[in-house]
Image (tube, rainbow, N blue to C red; front, side, top):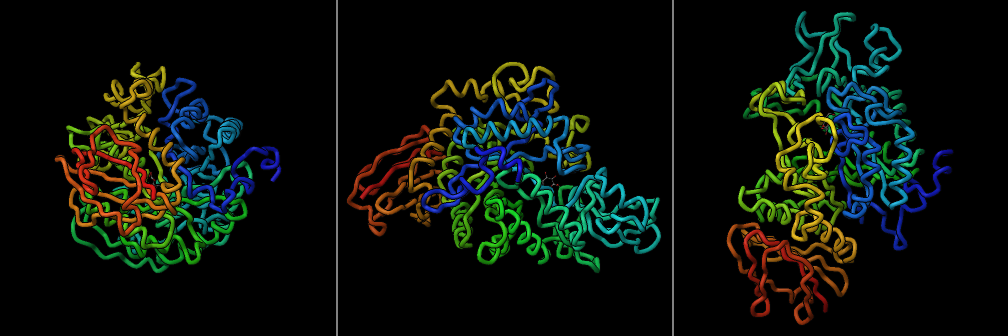
Length: 557
Ligand code: GLC
């Protein structure tokens, strides 16, 4: 607690956790995911760093961000670019030092921005001292901290499980003549969460950071924490994956019920510090997602709705269905449209002709919904994927293993585009990944000066989101529910409401919205924002909305 006390202004602890009305801070917060390798390079070595982030805090504040989630910046051999941690309680020298981190935290807190870290729960790096000891002999103190088994027969792994990154899930260790299990790369051995010592050590890691003033964690890969102790073979499912392998029904190594016990434990520790837990929860049904909130909200406050995030077409019915579904869970929704593992939303939803308008339309969707949004860095300027052109250029091992069908995740992790200058203003040296050609037009400097830019639309939208009670706390009421092209909804709060109309089609659409049942028939309406397209009210209830137009209006009684 010494450090927390030394940082009275820090926002990780109790004092600022709940507002005057009793709403926890994270319900009204806009989160921003930031990939530190690619955000801002303060020492010009081609790789981003924490001092770079600190230098950009005013930009984030001005954008309207309340909390930053920094992907792993701990010491790591960087096989999976930080998701292979070799020391949980330090900062990788490539990114700076603990002092740099404390300074970032203090400067962020001064601006009312909270910091969340990324906690890789499922596995460590093979360079972590726990694993180094574990593999040193069958009787080592840490042997049981990982999952070691004999092969089924000489030369054959213990069972048929496969790594999600394209290889076997088992690696043979010649020294101790056993296999260890890794759901990801061989350099990322899975921890054995059935061992209470692992649980205790990992819970302590979170305390270490909470005491420094961290406001919470994004929990990595929680679906994978437990495996069937009998190592039962998985059965195969229809189709093949991007590595060309038969799909597997991962019943025995994904989402085992024991995961929830660990989440309840992590939540108890988080509650001692009023911290928030965001989960990387890849669920395939709303029941699974619901489970991650826990009974009486005893697990994750913010499990990500990846079903919404992975809707891959601009489809009003698809989004309407996913929103209804997450709202039926009873939990507080978490909306995102991109992250460091999936192609950028600009490419996934763009049609090649109206991409900027569509980028704004998508922003108007997920930033006006009831729930906590998570932006992915660069989304606010319309950054595009920049996939490697040849196998030699690939940095992400996933792309090296799966080339050319699986190009890996480099494309969505390219340097932030700050200016139209060399290297997008990210660094004075050649960056670790090439800056996307779109930096010439889509960058912070150019867009800041253009009132019609994606960036300025994000800023206006986030300001609206912070100012309008209805957008923060209002209930979500779907309207015109059978419309195949236009997604319309109301966010209603007492005598006010915000109407959102999103034309997801390439033709002008007339919508007829009946607000009588919602009690807003006779009142007044004021246009708050459009993404540039026109929306014209004709007789009373009719609104004509141009292609890919987002129209936002305030209703009063
Ligand atoms: C999560 C991360 C991903 C990483 C993997 C293994 O899915 O988001 O980037 O490669 O876990 O840690």
